Amino acid sequence: MRLTLVLPLLLVSLVGCQKSPDLSGRWNMGMGATTMQIEFGKDGNYSGTMNGMAGAGQVSGKYSLKGNMLEMDPPTVVGPGGATSPGGGKMRVKMISRGPNMYELDAGNQKFSLTRMGP
Image 1 (cartoon, rainbow, N blue to C red):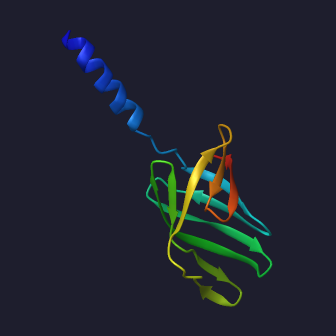
Image 2 (cartoon, rainbow, N blue to C red; image 1 turned 90 degrees about the vertical axis):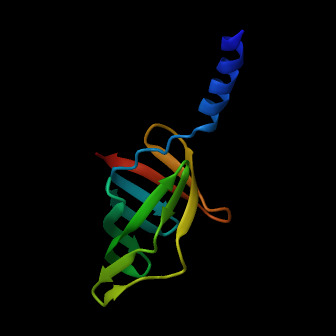
Image 3 (cartoon, rainbow, N blue to C red; image 1 turned 45 degrees about the horizontal axis):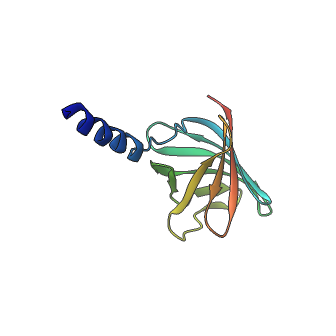
């Protein structure tokens, strides 16, 4: 009888836990006319390159995962004109799995793609 009470509680607690995806490695992030080839480190930092209508530049910043939510600080962009940061606060997006190496990033009013390029 005791097992019949414990088992449902254990199942409910396991269903409620959501493991964050492993983003460590190289990814391509498509955001309309802008693309970023970035590497997410296990230490919570990201870096890479960004190509868009304003040109190309090196990007770096911090990120965190909370369940299926990705939070990224605005990147510091270093290009021919110097370093800049777009500001605007953290980008918070819901990660929706679209396969083993692809996520749709849902920001509510905008959707982006995130595709693994390598380890």
